[in-house]
Image (cartoon, rainbow, N blue to C red; front, side, top):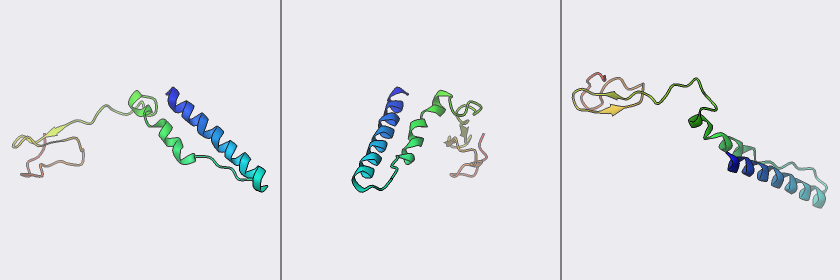
Length: 87
C-alpha cells in the first residue's frame, strides 16, 4: 500500500508542477492530473478485505458427474460436453 500511496503523491506533485510550468510559459491555466490512473491504486483492496467485506469467498466449483468437467461460473448449469446437470 505504501508504494501505491507514494506513486499517487508523486503523480499529483508532477501534474501540479506541469500545470505550473504551462501557466508560467503560456499564461494559460491548464490543470493536468492523471485521473485515469486512480483506480489502479485500489486494485488490491478487494483481496485484502478492504473494499467489499460483505462479498462471499471464492465461487463454488460445480462438477459434471459424468465426465468431470468443472466450472466456477454460476451461469453454467449443464455440462457443455454431454448436457448433464452439474452438481
